[in-house]
Amino acid sequence: MSPTTIGIVGILLMVLVFFTRMPVAYVMAVTGFVGFGIIINFHAALNLMAQSFYEVFSSYGLTTVPLFILMGQLAFNCGISRRLYDTGYKFLGSTRGGLAIATVSACTAFGAVCGSSAATAATMATVGLPEMRRFKYADELSAGSVASGGGLGMIMPPSVVLIIYGVLTEQSIGKLFVAGIFPAILVTILFIIAILIWCSFMPAQGPRGETFSRGAKMRSLLDLGETLAVFALVMGGLFWGLFTPTEAAAVGVFGVLLVSSIRRQLTWRNFVDALYESLRTSCMVMMLIAGATLFGKFLAVTRIPFNIATWIGGFDLPAFMILSAIVLVYFIGGCFMDSLALVMLTIPIFFPIVVDLGYDPIWFGIIIVMVTEMGVITPPVGINVYVVFGVARSLPGGMSLESIFKGILPFMVAVLAGIIILFIFPQIILYLPDLMY
Amino acid sequence: MSSVLKWIQCLSNKMRPIGAACLVGMTALTCVDVVGRYFRRPIFGSVELVTFMGIFVVAFALPFTHENKGHIGVEILVQRFSRKTRAVIDMVTELVSFVFFALVTWRMVLYAFKMAESGEVSMNLELPEYAIIFVVALCFVAFSLIIFKDIIEKVAILREK
Image (cartoon, rainbow over all chains, first blue to last red):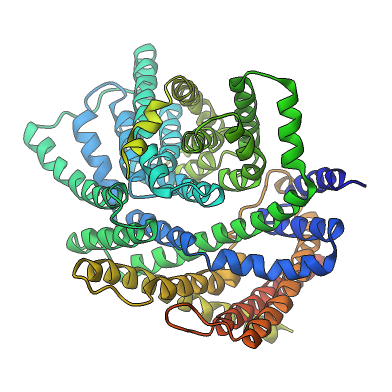
């Protein structure tokens, strides 16, 4: 068998084994090891395996991962989300669908200190769902806005997926982060438009809430200040090249700790919980990278990425058609797989093609995150939907999974519109990173 | 057997705080370094120390993460099966994982020995890197044992009437 055939058989087998619930990281590592052993020899594969794990664990570039995860977990455990939501609520609550708009905006703001979409969805569901229930919002609208809003946590920097993309493709993480800001704001605006259209057609689904005095509104703005300060410190430091990403993350952790200690919201229990949860998530991410690294070495010797690139090049299709096909693959893959795992699995194949087509690597990174953001809310695997479902179960009367999936639809359309806009106007992504050092 | 399983569990529980301490250490050291640099007194070798602590964060969390189902897997098909069928599937995949990570452990120990022979030390602080690889290998031992514990538990499920 030729290496390419072995590669294809290996990939197919791997996808089959995914469905046994075996951790994706382990499956990729085992496939990589066995495949490499068959094509080269097992002696070489044995030499490769321990070193691959150690190299990933000992990469300074990746030390930023546990730190940014810790920053998000601390923010999650210290009530920052509640205050962000309250600010949005006081300003927007009195308009139609205002609570849903407040939720989406708070998700974006929370995403500025948290790099994970599931954590953002979980924290906003805990805060936002009971409020929307109180004002008799339809389940579709409330759950849809929380689950989709969670995805904004992934686009808005810091973002774990962007870190991984940056490390795998050797792009500046600082630039990727800065590039994510405008697209995140764009998607937030599109989400708000979606909610407004929704509520103008079905006003009963998102009734008006309370009105607050100007004084109360202004006081609530102070709560926004702390998040803004931490975000400005982290992103400003990266933007002006004062910090490496690892340093920015450590400073961010310190900032969140400081804010929550001043507010006296940091208990020892919260702190330890945040540490252990970060440990767990970091270990998961690093093992995924290690698995993807081993798998990548196998893929390289099969020559599959090279062959696919030549094969696609032979069609002589316009670049945007090829790119659309790639986006479609991510979208379908995202329905079944976690976004992080998907990115790691496919980047070695698609990244060289996209760069060959002349697209900007930073631009492509943001597009990938946008598409996988759709993946986290699409059935049957959309992780955010299950997170929201899990939180909603504790509400009186619960919530059906079906209504959450229904509620997602308008937001999916909004993300799709966002992707199209970013295709047509790549400057939205590239303007800020181009200003950097 | 059950006392062995308890011992493995205890080992995993004891490793977790060490990982957490390293995470705190990474944050603190990096912050102090950033501030120190501002006053032109950066900490010598901080990048190395942060990297080593980063290694321990992941390595010491290995058993705990596996045990708490921290890793991403595709659940969609398996959750439709009965408890016993799931136990059979899990047992097979855990057996594969166990063999694989036992191999990784073995190679990690050999790698540590190789590095010890070569006498390679870290660039600034001249710390012996083989010692760190050796600790990582020990963490992989604990990790493999936790997978082993899972397999034994699946056998127990299959024995239920």
